[in-house]
Image (cartoon, rainbow, N blue to C red; front, side):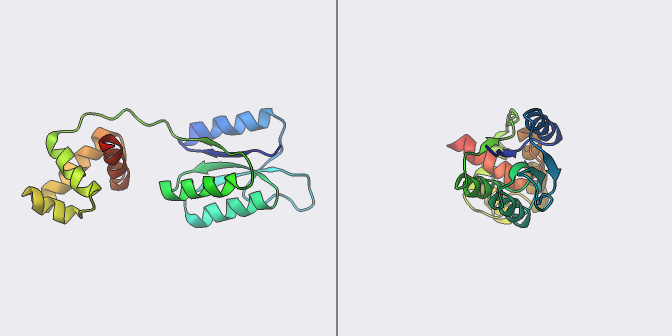
Amino acid sequence: MIRLLVVEGGDAAFADALADVAASGHRIVDGWSGPPGTDPVVCTGRVQTAEDAAAALLAALDGAGLIVDARAEREIIDRLCDDLRRLGPVEHRPAETPRAGRLTHQQRALLDLLVDGASLGDAARSLGLSRRTADRRLAEARAALGVTTTSEAIVAAARRRA
């Protein structure tokens, strides 16, 4: 059976997945298309955009197995996994969620407004902050949550509220 494997978590997690598949005897090629006229292969590559995800999906539709180094936004990764599940079982190895640090009350208040859909400027005004102070508070919240982007911080804050 051809493997469909989506790996999050960076280079080490991807290398582990490659080793697992190589040990099972599958032929692995770099990129989303195998050499023409050959037996089925397992294609590997990084998915950072919707276009990358489409190329990976086309490779799977052509009969290739996949090992996807998923580095795209959550929505793109989730959509790719859903599409691949239509072709067969998908092994999705999500990144280990870093243990979140403690947020201050002020950081939580700012993130709560962002989760509710406010822009950073609107959230700053609601809290009586300057935009620069809100930017700094948001950067501190990202660091406390162990994430690098504001989108990741908003997702983490939303999960904490749920």
